[in-house]
Length: 159
Image (cartoon, rainbow, N blue to C red; front, side, top):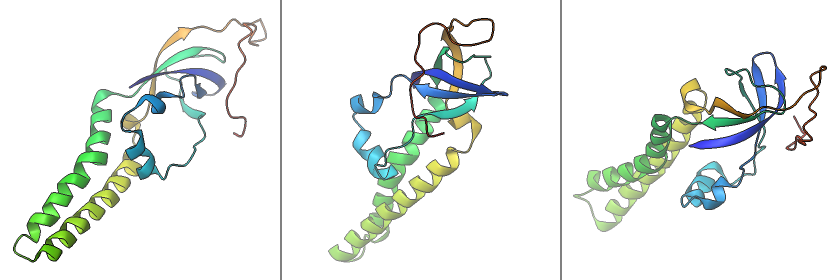
């Protein structure tokens, strides 16, 4: 997954990024499943991340989530609950219809809970977060380091 972002602020070795393409969820076919797992809450879009490439305030940067991280997140979010649904059904295979349905339901609930726990833990690992890969456009600055390109640094101001 590749996104673009505007560097709003730089402090030490971290940069505050404001994504410029915040509508990617609107074009995703799986957005309803993601929103249901995350509670559908509107989240603050600005975020701090390591500034490994030396970006400055006002720079437009490319952000990337590695394919392996994306596939792991997808597998834990979507495939694990389905797998546990079938496992619960098969575990109760010799029971009545009601017992098989309860086994499948219990497996599904266990899968959803496991997916939420796994995704929260993966979110704390460095390899499963967005990383700056390159500077797409440098901001024009004066000698004091102020942005003079006319680019308005928009985003959430509730840091």
